[in-house]
Image (cartoon, rainbow, N blue to C red; front, side, top):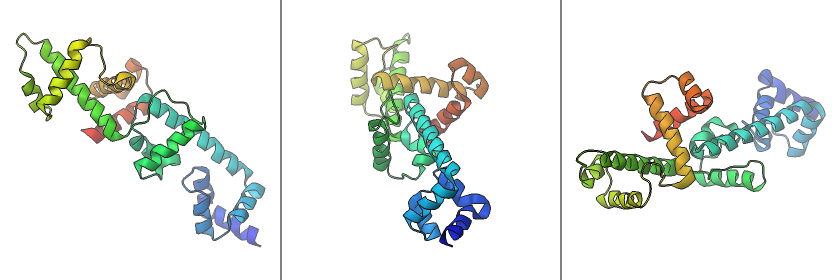
Length: 227
């Protein structure tokens, strides 16, 4: 009798609980609360009557892990991408989110080339990039402005501008990222964002930069958060 009642609960309302479990919208703990059945009872019914749902849950997890891996390697901040990935959407605290992703890395569930960063770090790198470009453009002027004007325009201290300027004077200012490989990746995203802001269509950006429409949408979403 218990098995029959639990089956009905899982399949009521067009299989809403079962579908939610498959899509990682809810977990085993949620099912316990929603059905008032024990963990062992739920697992028994799932294994006996809904093995396809368990397989779909695993497949969805693998797909979402691949999505997380791709987004991190693109340089997107994890606290923004989580909104689009059900597997991590429920992690509201950044520290919990970072720990969860680190476990995926440690368990070799995902392989990443870029470090996982938050929107705060992403915004900081973009700010430094904008300042770098302003300094480089200033170098190209017939009569360069005093650096204090760049500091005022970007709402930062003059000492910050002087520090970046000293770094650029030691390197190739046109082809050097202030933040290494991650900075280069974010500069690439910034260029795509600028192209979109200048009125380019998603399709043209897809062709020009070799990215997917979903990636272009994510770029727009990320930069909306920092502008």
